[in-house]
Amino acid sequence: MATFCTMLICIPSLLLSLLVSGVLSASFTFTNNCAYTVWPGLLSGAGTAPLETTGFVLNQGESQTITAPQSWSGRFWGRTLCATNSTTGQFTCGTGDCGSGTVQCSGSGAAPPATLAEFTLDGSGGMDFYDVSLVDGYNLPLLIVPQGGTGTCSSTGCLADLNSACPTSLKVVQDTNEGSSESVACKSACEAFDTPEYCCSGEYGSPSTCKPSSYSQYFKNACPRAYSYAYDDATSTFTCTDASYTITFCPSTTSEKSTSGGENPEAAPLASNTMVYFGANQTNSASHALTRVPLHRFIVTILAFSVLALLGLF
Image (cartoon, rainbow, N blue to C red; front, side, top):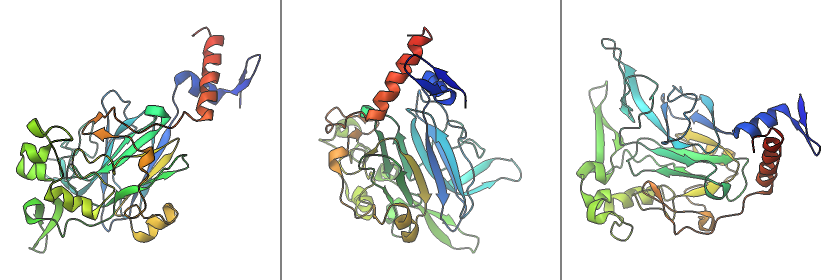
C-alpha cells in the first residue's frame, strides 16, 4: 500500500484519503428472520448524504450490508405484503409503503403504521444515538444490536408480535387469499384518532403536557425499550461509539442471544447514564453528561490537521 510521509509520520494512502475527505463509515447489516419476504426501506435525514440504496428485497433468511458515511442520520423500516401490479407496473406494500411505486423509496418515508429503527451517527460527543420507535405504530418485530463499539452499546428493539393482540380500534386488517382476514399492523393512537392529546401537538406539544395514554402503554408494556409516544425519551434512546449495527426483522430468541451475548433487550437493565434525550424530532438541551471523545478520535483529528497543513489547506 502506498504511503504519504511527513517529517513526523507516514500515513497509508487509503487513510490519507479518508482523513482529507472526512469520510469514516459504519455499516448496517439487515437480516430477515421472518417467515416471509421483507423489503427494507431506507431514508436519510435532511442534509445527510444518501445511502447507496433506498430500498431492496430480503427473502427469508437473507442478509445485506449497507455502508453509511460519517455523521449520517436517518431511519430504516421493513415493508411487508409487497407486490408489483401486473397492469400498472406500480410496486406497493401492504405495510410500510413509501409511495414511490418502486422498490427504491427515493427519499420518501414509511406510511404508518411501521416499526422504525432510527440512527444519528457520530453525534454529540462523538457518540451514535439509536432507538426503535413505535410512535408511528407497528408492523413487525425488529432488533438493533451494536457490533464492535465502545460504551454501553445496549441492544434495543421490539421482539413481541403486537399485531394479534392489537386493540381493535388500532388494528389494520387485510383479507387473505383464503377468504379470511388478519391483523397485519397496529396503528398509533395519533394515527387512529388524530387528536392533539394523542399526537402531542397544540396545547399537548411538550413533555409536561403530553403524557402516556392507555394506547401507548400497550406498546410500552410489550416493548419497554422502544419509543411508545413522542416524549418517551428516558427509556428509549441508546448510545454507542464507533460501532456497526445489525438490524434483524423478526428476531428469534436464539438469534438474539447469539448476537448480543445473551442479553435480552426487553429485560436487561437500562443504561440511563449514557442516554441523551431526543424529544419528537429535536434534541433536548437537558441531556445527561456526555462521555469524552475517545483518544483515537483525537489522534485522527491531529493527523488530519497535519495533512491539511502540509497540503496548504489549513
